[in-house]
Length: 213
Image 1: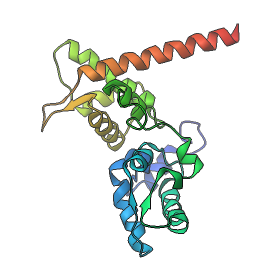
Image 2: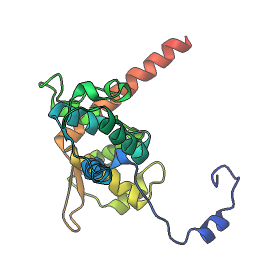
Image 3: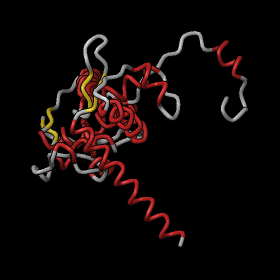
């Protein structure tokens, strides 16, 4: 609203005393099964998941966030007979959302797994911008810190937002985050993932031009 000129910037900073950033579930998949255990305890029920179901849940985007997860657990408690959740128990929106990386094709490469994970959400452009910056510094044999990265990004990301994007890229082995003040560098896998992102963008641009013609 500030960018659109519909809300006063000085008024925003008067209100902005204690900003609390709570990342959506899709950005903190490491919390998924902790939350699932919590909801089971809350409902005094215990179910186990087979490995295929775990893949589906980890790779699902959870657009309804924590509320959707809580309702999903309630749904399982009602429909599952026995103690094990299988693929047949999953609702259609989870089954049709995407193919987990190790579900049907064990030959998926690390690149394809990373692309699948990074494209699952709204932050693809953030990942691509970060990797581009790191690639430039990699050619100079340099690592950089978050401060420099923030300055070079084509748009603003808060420190907490940038930390989360870097944590995700580190998780899929696209970057190496140094200890203390060693900075961050792009990996060979990250360079290849960036190339795939750029190829995908080029293909989409060509498709858009064709449609316009």
